[in-house]
Amino acid sequence: MLAALLWDVDGTLAETERDGHRVAFNEAFEAHGLPWRWSVERYAELLRVTGGRERLLHDMATQPDAPASPAERERLVTALHAEKNRRYGQIVERGGIALRPGVQRLMREAAAQGVQLAITTTTSRVNLDALLSARLGAAWHTQFAAAVCGEDAPARKPDPQVYLRCLDALQLDADEVLAIEDSPNGLAAACAAGIATLVTRSLNFASHSFEGALAVCDDLDQPAAPSPRLRGARAARIDLALLRQWHGAWWQEPLRA
Ligand code: XBP
Ligand code: MG
Image (cartoon, rainbow, N blue to C red; front, side, top):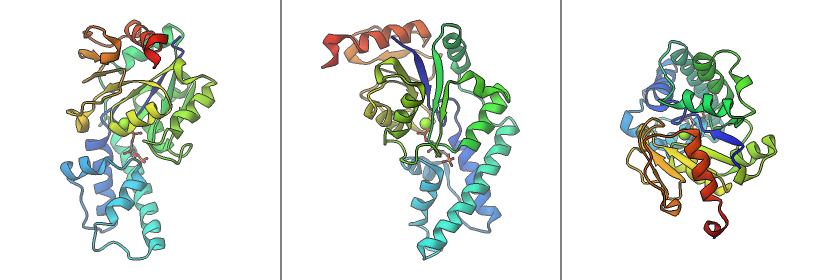
């Protein structure tokens, strides 16, 4: 039985990357007097590395003017990441990032029907708090049974740690929840935790095929294609009744193997 929806944040709740984190990283480079700037195209490549700190460290390896010593790099990354998060908070507060279509509708449906909501994200807690305070109000956390962030799960997606920690917090088994993700690393993390996963493709992964997903859509208000394993019809949009149906079929005994 479906007991909880586990929401990824970046790319899933909102398109935070291109016009949020990317812009904030570039502002942080500028504030530190660094010539580095991440274009839309370069940032799309860098999204293969999950976690802002990890992304910065990865990119520094390609920058000839980055500090040579590992300790100095770590110090610079810490300072840049803090500055980036501060600026991301400002972008979000100015109303720069909206929730994606259908997100609040599905959250309300779940809450009304006793299905718990939880957060499973690689992002820092400060970024989650900024986004959800701006979009759902300061008491946003009362709507969620658990919120597992980057600080709680240092092994980044595609490692399943964030999902396993969330299952622990909710005291639920993998077959009682459904994850909602937007990226290949997110899908891989949820699948590695044994969780059926709906993919709402985000800007940076619009043409990815997402094999292994329960279903794939372009946003929650758009038509969705269920996995061939479900042998179901394409749906006009995602709602809770449909997710319950697909989730039940996913875990039917004959399909398990
Ligand atoms: C999200 C991320 C995050 C954000 C920035 O991955 O990789 O790192 O880009 O957040 P996912 P921080 O959506 O798969 O969880 O800078 O706070 O890490
Ligand atoms: Mg994501």
